[in-house]
Image (cartoon, chains in turn yellow, cyan):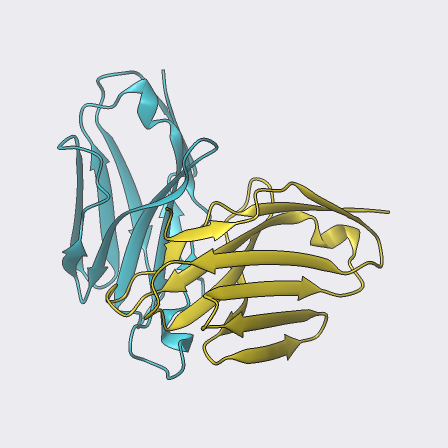
Length: 112
Length: 119
């Protein structure tokens, strides 16, 4: 079992719809959770991080964390074609010192 | 701030040659990470440093790979000898571990990457 698993995708949604990206992790002691966006040919950039159970909202983005279920998700409301990218989930475990483990990513396409 | 700076952006070399990738982290950051990204294997952590000291090099694929961080503002990743299977995009990232509460200190800032092609 991988430490961090994401739905394999690709995920395609129409413009204006809600895109839902999911991530599960195996280390129950994980502390911090990150969503990075990576456009094709570019480097990953952080869009959200969350460390407490519940929801965290930032503009059109909402991160949801459920530590009991070892599950973190990212919702993108009113999806735009510019949201088309690969989304990487990263998890920092209790035993990992300074490093985070990345999932393989989910590629999202938003169709006009 | 200029962000994380990597050089070169592109490197094409022949099998057996030595390759050196360079990284300048964000000023003031205390942790530096080297990653490799391929379509097949995704983003893999090779090694990371904290306060210039290598903490975890378990991701370094083999002895052909080595990394150094002689000071807080510079790191190198060397491959000698290079092989075609080393072709990938290599990213450097930095963070300020312990510099903020609630996970913000673990945010990693990535450089633009070096695209390596070994022929």
